[in-house]
Length: 148
Image (cartoon, rainbow, N blue to C red; front, side):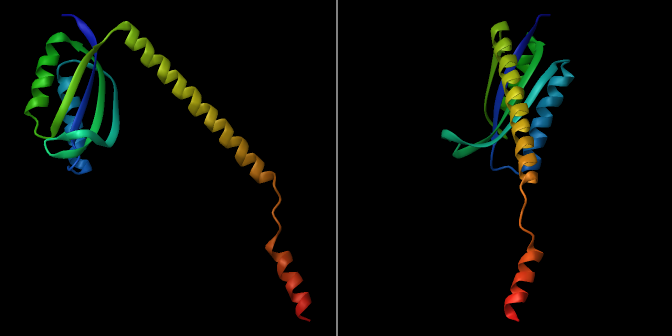
């Protein structure tokens, strides 16, 4: 069978507690692994406000799954999404080579930015260590002298 790269975004009912949300995400992950899919990444975006109410909900918990699977797996996966009452909306797309390249470039930019921010933070810490702060004990001595 032919394997493709896919991306699924799932909106889970935000009224659920964190444990229930995580169990829903784990159920999706287990389903994909049981169908011999290769999960590349799972991003938990968290609770976000919806653009419009869905099933009387104004917010939802977003989760993104990037994976490689056979084409027949998608039908079973979307059936799971439809039957799970905790999932209020989903979208699965096929990623082509250009999409995968763009995702890789974006990850590299994010890693470079994170390392750059770490270097800047290190410099700030070093500079603050160099600054000499007036010692509190000197202030106490001065106040004692004025009292006499």
